[in-house]
Image (cartoon, rainbow over all chains, first blue to last red):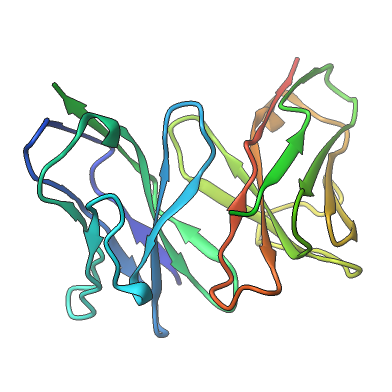
Length: 108
Length: 117
């Protein structure tokens, strides 16, 4: 069965500190992973996808198949990074399976 | 990016009534739309996948007679919660995919808050 686990419901760090949001997955096929972000009072939007190997807003995420992880990292957190972050796995052609989400709070 | 709208944004209804939620792709044709349900402080749970002109595919445990989905055009999908009960109260979110995107990126609507009294 496909499953995405985000072990931290809440994460709080100070501005300028490094951030790591953890994501682990379970999937028998070749995984395609994403991070979505939801800022306060806004809709869910794509932050980054692993196949693009890109950095968006200073965030990066590397797929580690050995550890079945796709942790989201940023070296220096900014206050505007405060949001809800969801890790998602594409299972099949289009279907997405979401983790439970991590609420990130950046303290000034 | 592509824009998806939902209407209404918030609805309150009495138990036993039916409620229709619309999901529209505003500037693109959506070959596939998805309906999710989000409980408070929980993740998004996929309810069904809707393809234009065909029957929706429901996830396990989702009652298709309870949650009627119609995808009559390439820009509109509707979710009707029939004979709603308080346990149906939730946040319903739709998303859409355009056939022209090789990444099959899902664009999300703002969600509809349903409260059943």
